[in-house]
Image 1 (tube, rainbow, N blue to C red):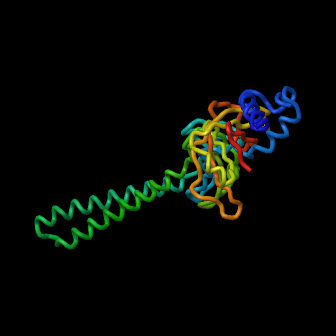
Image 2 (cartoon, helix red, strand yellow; image 1 turned 180 degrees about the horizontal axis):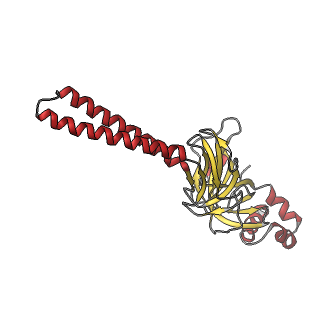
Image 3 (cartoon, rainbow, N blue to C red; image 1 turned 120 degrees about the horizontal axis):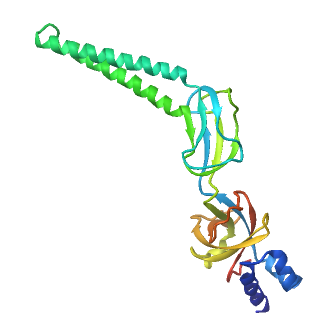
Length: 257
């Protein structure tokens, strides 16, 4: 009973005080009991993107550096696409030629100078030319890489003027304003753990405790480790929090082995 009361009291202070402050105020006996009743946790981004080259081309310019924080739709990287632009001009010319031929032959069909089969072949040629133009337009969409969401550039794998092959990694972008608390709980905790359960996480890199709530519970228990993945969200937003930071989580009335 004394241990449970101390743990509950400790949580009240953990939501607003650091572990060092608790140690000074409550002493070693309380901390020893509290540290055996905690779970390791890590901050993970809700959104993460590893960009790969959609075309084989030379990197024309890199507009960001590793560590930069960017807004959504920011231009990150651009390729030299002069060759693809030239291919588009040729495809447009083929479309124009096939369409002109089709229109002339349709008029000749009215005079019985050509047959229906020739019209069908002209229509097929126009469809092929339009398909080639659409394929070139699809390639042009990969000439620029833009941020699909606001975040921080955590990795840059290429340099300007470097040739990259299609599928080669370019950049990595992670969201910083939407971080989750990820932890592995003992499977026995499913007896009391619920979505909405309150907790406090001591972020060790900042030596600061922050309150939060559980938002999702994994759908399966690992049969080897007898653990279940659990995800939480901190109640407050703090720009000093970074993906990958870790710490310890304490639940309000949790008591598990």
